[in-house]
Image (cartoon, rainbow, N blue to C red; front, side, top):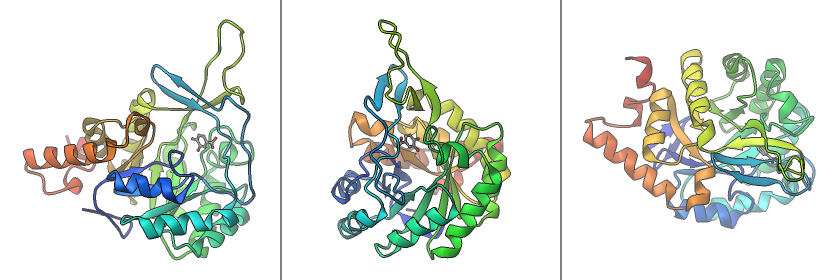
Length: 299
Ligand code: DHB
């Protein structure tokens, strides 16, 4: 059992936003597979079709995607969160996005009726102009949006950060100053793939966000830096596919880990990683995840 931002999780594995999070039923399925908590696909103020296909490509080292924040709008998603809350015995976190503070607040207030356990602000989509690509690199906007949502809701607000910045600590600090209960790091790293036979960029949007094993060392460093710079918890995400990866992320400074790309390998990943962490803690005489959070800073 871990407690982060006042919320109890049966284990430190959390379904990351963007995977299996578009319906209440799929979120419940992830909780039945052992996830300690689940995060929805990002929901915005208006229905959005997203970028043209292909919107996802599998690479040797991970996935490149540019979905374009497709979603039915908060008005049409309230019921999915209600279904997830009814069927899940673990916390359900609503990931939201908007173009400015007013839109973020409208989405958060619109979803509040479904009683998500926390909000995760997606200020970090790498390729949606007017949304994450511009917001998450601007500490003033991050602080203002975080403060506005914190004012509007009575549950913890997490802020998901982009690695596509020069100094992630200053953006994390802005989230903390705005009242965030935790930061989540990292969202995807901007990337591109080109088909050498046609010369065309493969993704419909030409470029997208890289996830999976390629980004793990980037995520470890970001979590390490944020742990040092901030007083609020850091939730680690980026390329975690084994319990060893999770322990590494926790030792960098994470209080819990989110899992995204690895879910494509099988939904057992949550139970496997949670069990592996538990065994590692026991074998080494640690009482809990807190005992090894940030351990790499002490040696
Ligand atoms: C999308 C959003 C993200 O935050 C991300 O990292 C990748 C893709 C999207 O919906 O396009």
